[in-house]
Image (cartoon, rainbow, N blue to C red; front, side, top):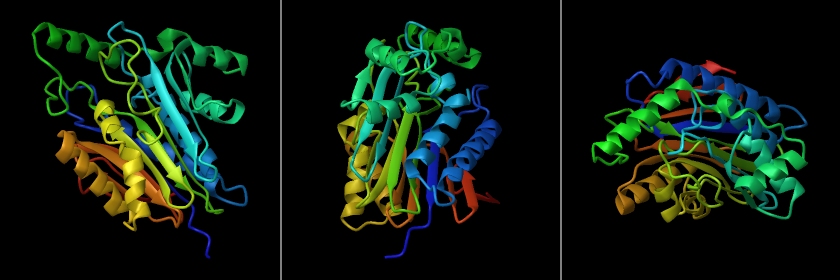
Length: 320
């Protein structure tokens, strides 16, 4: 069997991207390309590694305050940052996740350490932060994670709540929760697949809230026998339909990654009235992306060619 073409697909969150001053679309496009290039470097040559590629790409997005992960995380009702992340590899179905962690620059790297250095799959809150200190992960000052745009979003959210209104995915009039979650999927030259997802949650979430992102089968799923998926959208809805596992199941039944992504997301829309987005790659290097929100930041790299876009039908091609 021929080796697959090393392929990386990443997303920076699905949502509305309304033009309210919160969202720098040009900055998002620049950031997603940078992350794609950094991740793809780990798929080139004899050391080609899908797990290294997805970690590097997601770390880049976590370091970019424009994305809702790491330094760009949303604020809880208490004005704090609580982050979730997961990473999974398809050879042995190993996975590691962290939830409700604070002050960690790259939660996805901490999730990988959970996978590689513990017998557990998911560590939460102070326990995850304690583990981070034990393995030498540097904690950053809390103020490093609180950006002015996120602070303003929380203020507007609280004002919206005081007016007796509720926030829903279909209601973006304040530009709140414009895009959420970052993620990556990859297949390397050895036929290994991997997936990773990281998020800063949603504006005004309760302290201790856990969405879909750090949960296997929801935020990610992968298997070398089939492929890999990463999802984005309202976590509570994604969890109810186990979106990532559902998507990979459709691939297992013979659908292409593109058809599988569309079928899984359309099911969530029909069953729960919830839009979202997802990316997927097959064990052979075929890939797909789809969103039924107004926008999703995405990029792909294969055979030295980089594609990216934000809005429906947008597919900009450039060289790696």
